[in-house]
Image (cartoon, rainbow, N blue to C red; front, side):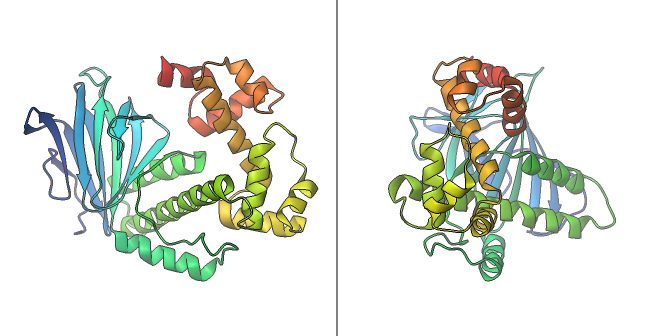
Length: 316
């Protein structure tokens, strides 16, 4: 991808990916505003959609990291009958050549739906995964840093959200060190993507084969005992590790401490409970929190909105 330091404004008919609306057997261009900024081997695009639409197709030839800024989308991947709600503070990662369909249920002239995409090559991800493999040897042979192409839909941590905001600033400003700083920022985004993938693999093992490794056994124990206060000594015994080794492996493989990981599991479980119809108070205490204000703060940090606002956004 060529480096460009100037602002480019164009419609959705770029070579790198297509954005089209189905109409019977015909495909017609969906007119929306797209502004693109290029960096070293990467490109940032910001989209504003000004009218409601359904089953809009999106394909990219490069790996595409999508982040919602404002509004709501419904994304359809391989399961065309089941759409996933895509809201601010969330990311949606598409591997090269993948195709998804999108609904824009709330877009209008006064309140357009806004998202950003950052595209970079599969080769860039492979280079970084090789470096991570060399620097960080994982306990489980099945959990590697190799990129496995599939669609990832994840909620941002606060750090990831701040990184995306920083990248937008870097791409759109003429900073004297722009190219180097964009390059570093995109590399950090790739590292976060690989860590998210690794987390998904470990969570999958905890459901299907909890004895795969010590870290998987620890994750399985936390999932099954979500409401019990964290006992690090007990968790260490389940993982067959010392306390210090347990903390090292959690930090290395999950990027956080056992306590922080337990909080993340609880927050996600509370969101599922809210989606199943429970009140915010019920969801708070059912997953092990004992202070509603603390729960609300942690939930807002993780999802970018309060538990009540989350219910309204997702479930009306």
